[in-house]
Length: 44
Image (cartoon, rainbow, N blue to C red):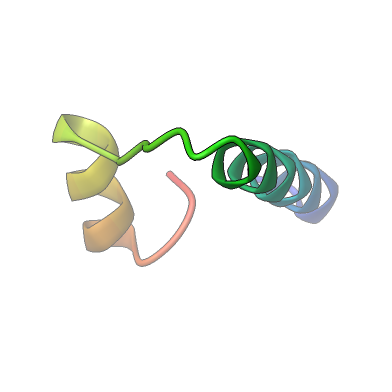
């Protein structure tokens, strides 16, 4: 994944995280998303 795409995905996730926390909406990573992120130590 190119650096600009990685940076944009991170910015998008931080915005979503902020919005969900602001409105007390819980979320979590599950299944393949969580396993892949742990295995690859980052964005998958």
